[in-house]
Image 1 (tube, rainbow, N blue to C red):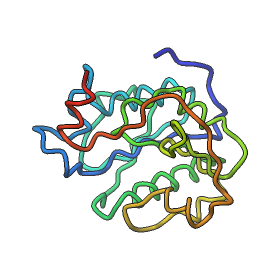
Image 2: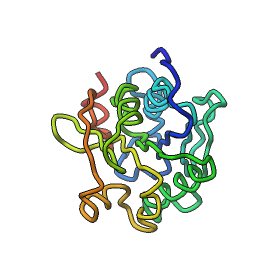
Image 3: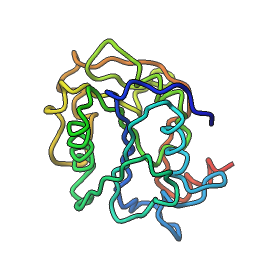
Image 4: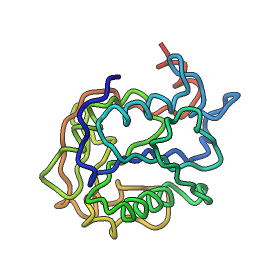
Length: 195
């Protein structure tokens, strides 16, 4: 994936990758499982890197992805990933605030077929404080959260930005993206998509 022109550094990108992947019963953690020639999370990292988002971070738990990074991604440690996805999102939000970001684009490490075009399209999207990627009309990741909604994010539980969709529908906009937004949670799903 060739890198495109950089997006204004007031927009940051974050991959949430701290979960334990308990439904995946393989020999390794699902994010390190081989998917089309590389660890699954490698596809998400490459897509974010190639999107043109200059400031990038990964929220991690007990896994080390350093061999997949080029040194220009910030690694943020979540000490309590079992407390739910919201804890990783809060860590990402705090980092975005420290970086003086006006918005952050958030995606997941277990969606290897979401390419750089979706990350870039969402990063550049305007129209609402929360911009959600859709694929054939269905809301998925990544999601762009403007600074004005940072304080609305949940502080606990296993739901991230999706928690805002129902509570604040007037703050949500959609933009259709290309790609396949499947998330891989089981060995069977890995085998099905690992063509």
